[in-house]
Amino acid sequence: MRIAEIFHSIQGEGRYTGTPSVFVRTSGCNLRCWFCDTPYTSWNPEGDSLSVQEILDQVQKYGCEHVVLTGGEPLLVPELVDLSRELKQRGHFVTVETAGTVDLPVVADLMSISPKLGNSTPIGDNWAARHDQRRDAPDVIERLIRDYPYQLKFVIDRPQDVAEVEAWVARFPSVKNQYVYLMPQATTSDSLKQMTPWVQQAATSRDWQFSPRLHVELYGAQRGV
Image 1 (cartoon, rainbow, N blue to C red):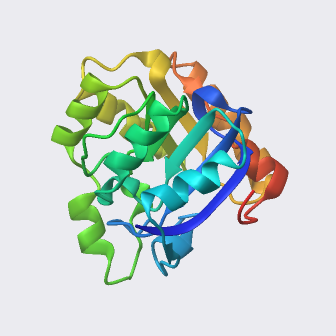
Image 2: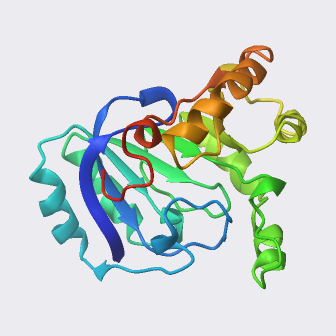
Image 3: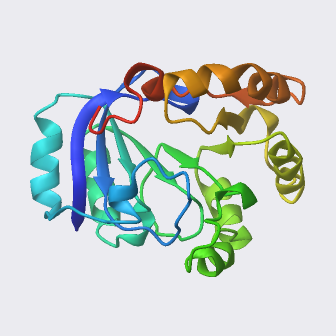
């Protein structure tokens, strides 16, 4: 499978914010969010071809319980099924980060789903139509939230995005408020500071969660941290 990077850092978002984790980042994505913070896995995918065993060997060097399988879109990679199973057998806590548009029978202790809102569509680009056609897959979402412990993380760029999240959540009656997270669209610590107060208020007023973006606060858009 094509791997953009493997590195040790802290989880910056969601339920396990601050948890030391090893990140295995696959390369390749079926979407093209204009604000993608890992364009080297989507707009300009790069990376080396590694076997499951080679990835396991690199992960084991860090001696870390939590492993995050991320991308790009990791659920595009069939080998992720074997990788997730092997990681779990070795005692790791496995998080899979996905946009929730494609499905694989992976093993995951947490399915971290980041559905893409209308604010993600690239404007004036030949990817726009394909992106919009692919970004919403309710059947996939239903399966993931039924079969895994999950969280739903929504990137908020403008106030009207919050109403779109409300409409999105209303389509899935089984979704629990405590698993819905709003997080600011930001790639620098300054923009994060500006957006955090109103995004946090929007979340708490609806009995949802606010997700910090600790990696942005600490490292900005720096890669591999």
